Image (cartoon, rainbow, N blue to C red; front, side, top):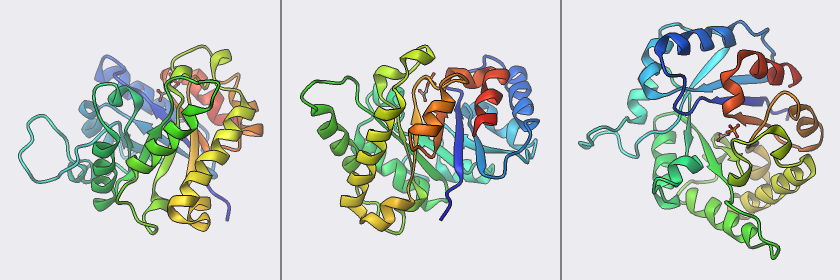
Length: 250
Ligand code: PGA
């Protein structure tokens, strides 16, 4: 089975105005479309309704978060039902910048479940904060994946994309991203962890993408040697030129 590659833009808390958000997404829409790549953009909640009205053809909408319930009263939260009603197809869940604000893996597992219930495809972020010589980060990652996917069954797992984002490599220059052979090792490791949880056949179907300082100059070597199913791109997705540069390499 040939898996479609994913290129996900994570705008984070950018850009500062709806005008710039519309310009950026209209720019993405003009990229020459590649059949084997899904171009996904994770947009701040506040811009999603306006952008959904554009009915874009090449760009798939994602949120950067969602709440773990749809019906109870929760002031200030946004549910997966609301997102689905706008045609949002994906949601980033458990980004390290949200984990840092206090989201635990057990809370994140509730969000993954809630997203799947309402047909939003989760892009689950995992990754260690630091690397230690003894390899403790591998245990950390295995636990983080297990806890974040608690309650997800074998049938559901293929709808989940894992975004491996080592925290130490996020928001740096491209030369400080993880190297392709280390990415390859981590992709194999994550697939093994998924295999233990869901069986190897299901684990093979899960897309594993890399995030952390991906840009037009390092994307090619990572694609050639990293064995990933795509990228989650933060700051470089705010530059049309750089983001198109990555897209064209896929
Ligand atoms: P970066 O961010 O590409 O700016 O490192 C990636 C992310 O945090 O998703």
